[in-house]
Amino acid sequence: MARLGAAFGAEAEMLLAPKPKFSMVKGFSQLIKADYRIREHTFGCLERLTEEQTTDDAQDHARFERAFCHSLGFGTAKCVTKVRALLGHSDPRIGYLEDAVANLRKNGYHSFTNAAVEALTSTGHLGNPNLPHEYWRSDSLINVVNLSHREYRTMPETFGPVHFATSWLGSVPMHLMIEQSDYQSCENFAFRILEVSPSRATREGHWTEAELELKSFTRSLRALQWDAIDQDVVISMRNLAAVFEARGCADDVKQLELKITSVVEGISGHSYSANPLDLEWLHSLTLY
Image (cartoon, rainbow, N blue to C red; front, side):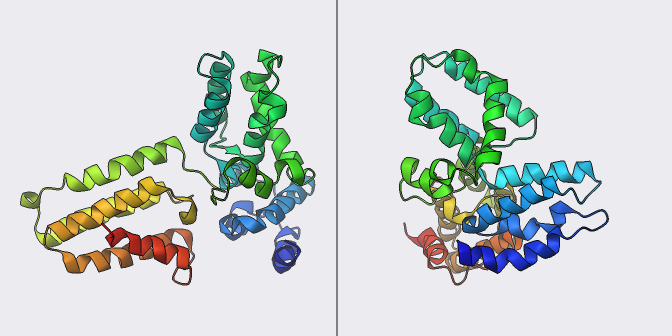
């Protein structure tokens, strides 16, 4: 972590230098996209930006905070699912949690931070049956989210991403979870592709239509880390590859892999060609 922090320190110091109308969204876009291991360092930059306000663009600041919250976030759907499992379906606190989720979305928080989820699902909270129901009301949960931002660096043993990932998610690298809307996109993606009728388009037209579906699908997941995408996405992509093979487009299966890589790289700005995990994922598309 120290080496990673040092590697990005120079760039961060340059970005933090006072500038007129400094755009935090543009200036930190690459840091937001960076590997989750350096996000703790990025969060420190955000803290300093809050203390040393270098922009008079309040709207820009709000956009950055929302983007940063989402980049650190775990899907609210997963959070609700976890809390449901721990509390039981009849617990009235679930209703408070769902109201809070709705209000957080309304206020621009597209997902809880990992620290907020850790706070909500810790034994100190859910393990206490005498915890007042008021704790679960919307304003209290929003305070938990805000607290998680402030305490993220000062309490790493409680809120740190490594502790969180190992204590709740095991070894799965789910530093970013897919939200409910994205799960629905995954589930519907294969069906939309399968509905493309060969009588409505030539082979080339069918490819164009399928390619548009692929781009639409990947655009809906642009904020996600591809190594955090779960099996549902792989299944959807396998179905797409199967469509091409079944329609006499066996040669296009390999082209599909290349196009997926191209789309992903275009969205994320990263090259995945050297990542064996991503290569394995791409190759799995043709394993039926």
